[in-house]
Length: 519
Image (tube, rainbow, N blue to C red; front, side, top):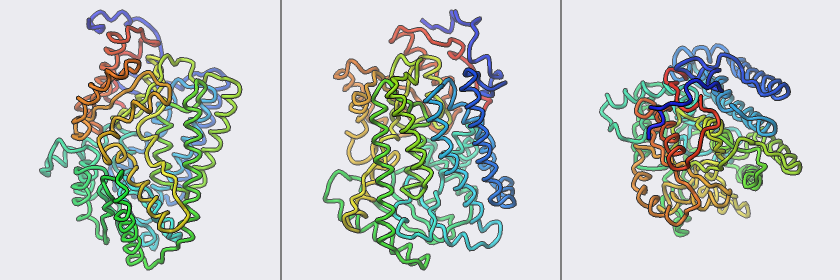
């Protein structure tokens, strides 16, 4: 039965009434009770202050960047995006979400500011020569041995993060990529990165460029196209794809040393083993805090959840690696809140009827899907696939062991850990769901990810052995909202909840709405 034809909920009032039609734009702030509403507003002001500090770092260059790069304008929607990620949460969960988001904002705005400050397009600057560009799936660990140099992520802000803010951003680049003659069914993450290069929309900064073979063939092709359009020396960090085999460790170590020699040659700086080991100890502290957070996430009293938990971890992997002190401070503050909630037995997500793990390549234009799941159906997303990637503890007993461990961290990096190393890793969600006491899994079926799509039959077959875990398969086109919209995704979930779970929504106004014109 198609519930939309009957539509018994059309006259109900609820959370959706706060938004303008056909958008995700709110008419007014969410009422959370006096205390939480005031707290939420004060933290919104903190984010506004972080954005103001971003502009103050180099107002002329940042303004020129706004006029030069079409992707930079999407960040004007940052505060709206933050509000979408905070919808419906209260108490300790709200405190943790804002604590983590402040760190995310500091890392993102700091990175963007330094990108503009080092951009040769706006005039010669010594800052450019102090920056080393990394492809976005590679964290900054290897540069820890060069304290005077700054790691700079390529692609992340031109595509991935910008798409979180503005679902319309990648459409221009994807169409450009197809007009250029590249295959339309390649990974959207890779396609967008290549199109940004084709359109000459990357800042002209950096002393040298480090690309890699992560996580798949599409990404490797993307790297080749981008590499041709950077006027700086480049190298490929070709880390082992079959990383479970210990025999590949020797090769991984040689690749790390090759990258170090390349950076030394092109920056004039010497690698400092002591600085590297020192930074890896800080990396280990971040990983330890992350794993302590997992312990709280397994309980009914977790304040960690929804989309911000996985975002915070991804930022830690991509930008920190032990170098950003405010990441560690945010972790410790979040853990303090979690301990208090656990001791007081506070149910931080009182609407929750189900606990969910999200797995696979998600729709980046629908980043706040977890908030909708919670507010509409009472489905609490405990963790996503990204939470478990790049969590390698570095062996600091010697330089070679530390470099090998750092290579392992890259091999287990974002998107790579479950797409390489063997097909078994893509179906680790069964074990994770059981470990985190989840009764549901949302499989993001990215229609351009050939590797993951090839295992759909395996997932369906294994489901028979896990009768207590419901697997919901939701298609998406990762960066392209036009193929399968946010509302299309919601309707797949609605049909599953009505027909399979035989449940009714918590807020029927959130069942069916058009937000295609919104950010």
